[in-house]
Image 1 (cartoon, rainbow, N blue to C red):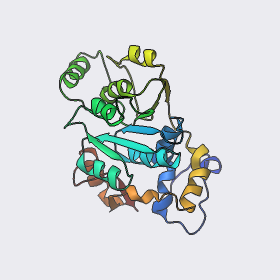
Image 2: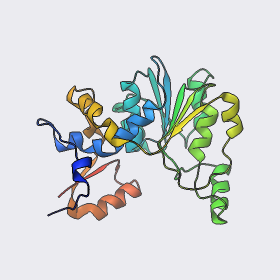
Image 3: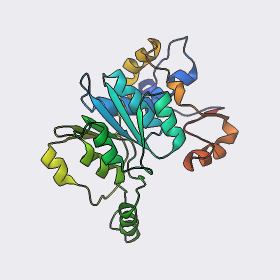
Image 4: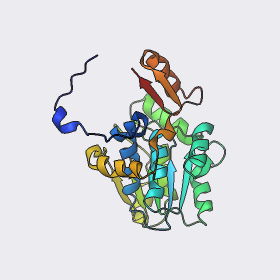
Length: 249
């Protein structure tokens, strides 16, 4: 099999011997994305970081927050296996937002102060509960809103004064009911955008070589390339406890 790779002399990065494909595969996207999300939090020793969304990027954001010096990481999701991975692999304290109000829970866990920084690893596909969920569906139905900013709303309110809001989660269009007044009054700093992957390849490779992290922890479903349609199906619909699929030709 052949693949055409435009500008291959620019984009390729040589991997040294002694590492498996699974260990370095995620240098191509989700590890740098999670790391940049944590880096954008300006983490100081002893900080508490809260991560909304425990998918693959969220899992790497959790691990990266610890690499950068966080003392506590709180992970928010509703999918049991994702929360379990965040707790067991990422050593995070976990919150299931279908059981409690996530924003209030995070504030309570930080003594009412709120976390020093918050990460939105969900983006425009966030699923809310109660009135917010109905509101967003109605706005989308009449094309007055394209994205669902449920997680963004919660984390802005939860973050401490002077804190950082990092947004690796993708937003593609229009948002509504975002509490910008709260963000302004708290003096929050927002950082977002697509990840500069090439910038992080060498330093993250060194973390892998040094044994600081083995990115293969996130793989739950290795599959043959012929099974790709099934892999996409179970990942999209969160079936079979799927968190990350890896396809092997």
